Image (cartoon, rainbow, N blue to C red; front, top):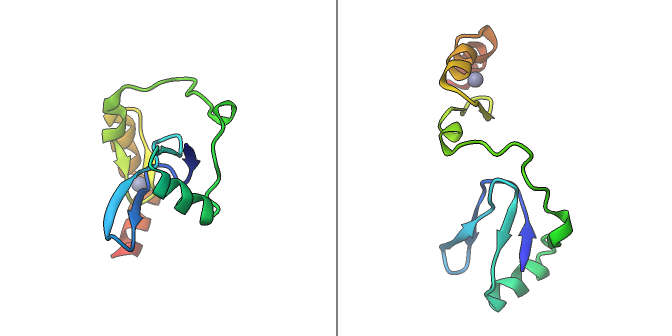
Length: 99
Ligand SMILES: [Zn+2]
């Protein structure tokens, strides 16, 4: 069964203190474990139906993920774009704020 959550979020079993898995980039986590299916349902985690999954229109290469601004939580397609962003006043100001 598939459940929807915040993309790229790790799912923790607090009781067992272990990682169950992670919501994928499209926010979907799939499990076949009846124990967790029941837990997710009990926690009213939204169930994903096949129709609801929107395939990415423009699949990006794996390398795209390596350019990511942690400060703004923004992914970048290329190193060039990312570096350009890190040089902006906005990014610098926010980064200072966080210190
Ligand atoms: Zn930034």
